[in-house]
Image (cartoon, rainbow, N blue to C red; front, side, top):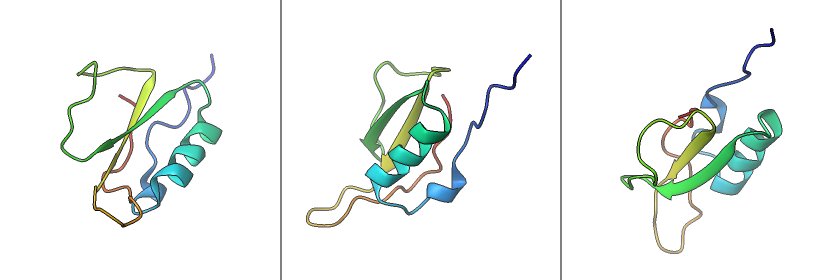
Length: 73
């Protein structure tokens, strides 16, 4: 039985959102990756075993940076 693969990406903390999403997708291409401003409730809410949420700080005129370690769920 194979392992499910990587489930968290602490190395992308403070990265720009799109390179972080690319890294996660390269590690786990089968997952859905969504980016959301920090504090946003995902749709659908709750744990999703096939999803990674990338939360970023939203600031006008600034590159959006990952502010929460992305994890499967």
